[in-house]
Amino acid sequence: MLSRRCAYRSQVSRGAHGVCTMFSSDGMTCPPDADGTAACGHRRRCSGLIGCALLASEAAAHVARLCRSNPRLLSMLVQEKCGDDANSSRFAHDFKTLADVLVQRVVSKRIGRQFPELEGNVYGEENDTIQNNKGQDVTIQVGETVEETLQCLTKALGDDLDSAKSLAEAAHKEFESKDLNVDCYPPEEENLDLEKIGIWIDPIDSTNEYINGNVDTINEYGFHSSGLHCVTVNIGLFDKYSGKPIAGVINQPFFEFDAVNGWNGRCYWAYCDGQKSLNSLPEFISCNQELVVTSNSETDAAKAALRRSGYTVATASGAGYKMLCVALGIVKCYALTKDSTYAWDTCAAHAMLASQGGKACQCNTADGPLTYRPKTAGGGRAHCNAAGVIASRDPQTVDRVHALLSPLHLHCSSSS
Image (cartoon, rainbow, N blue to C red; front, top):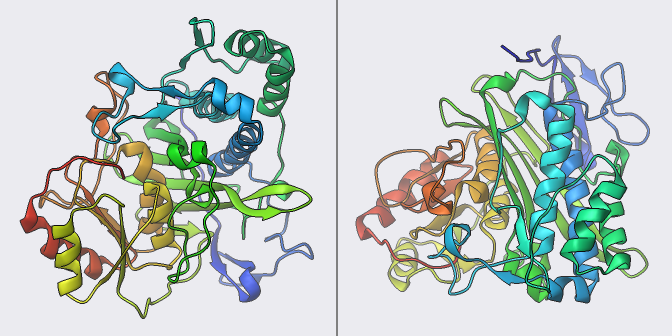
């Protein structure tokens, strides 16, 4: 049996000015290094599985930014999903891009390279095949070398050697912990039994916003309703036997724009094993405003039920982004009555909420928390959150919103 186990020797909390402070097992505070890096006798280097996922997410974000900066790349390989690849109820038309597929392969490759025990247990939203402009099906692979990846991408891009070379180099670009825009690094030692772990990847959540490329301003509530800021790379770890989320990484590739350097990203991570919880998120923020975020296509009946009970209702794009806003304390709750989110949308953010003492449950039934399982045949619908979602850092809020919405028993279909 192949497995790795080791125990955490520290806990993480946020100190002043957004710097994370490490608390060792004896309760003594370990101050950060001069560069803000949390230290406990040595520098944190993201060498564990969660750290690996963080670095993989930044590599993925780099590829996503490159594709978005090249209109030709984006327009060449934006394709409508069909068959088992399509989330048929989610959009009138569901699209994937070369970036979706390549990002997924980049994350899978990097995790599998460092943790070969997980081979076959890293699952993604997309299948690995895309059609080039000659009508040929090409299976996207990230090889062991830039040259191997270049050969594959050249075929995918219809012999556009320059674009293929740029993407191949981006897919193999290495990142270090110092390259991450994250408040603190995860511990190097983890209490993770790799034999039990499955991983769900959403390579580019909110693909429509990614394709459109619009930049929306922050709304009156402190978050973005649409646009590139809503795009996320989600990596969620779960227990294959219990179905519980274990850890999550979310990367916002388009967090802020710099006139000189272009787009920069932002990363978050969390871990929870039922005994210890660690994360890079803010401490609990009690929202003065009872704000619920939902889908643009949520029903009028659901919105009205929330408003009658004193909640303010706002909408935003991207299920991962909406749940991240909950984890960050920007909104009180995310609620969706529809069957339009999937395991890859919610697993990472669910782990973040669990690390904060929060929860995510089904909306239209009394079946309890969302659970996750390995990928099965039958397409995306097999992993649909069919009874909707309610998620909050505050379990009592989840219970109150569930009591309001579950009687509606809405089973409509639309975007998340």
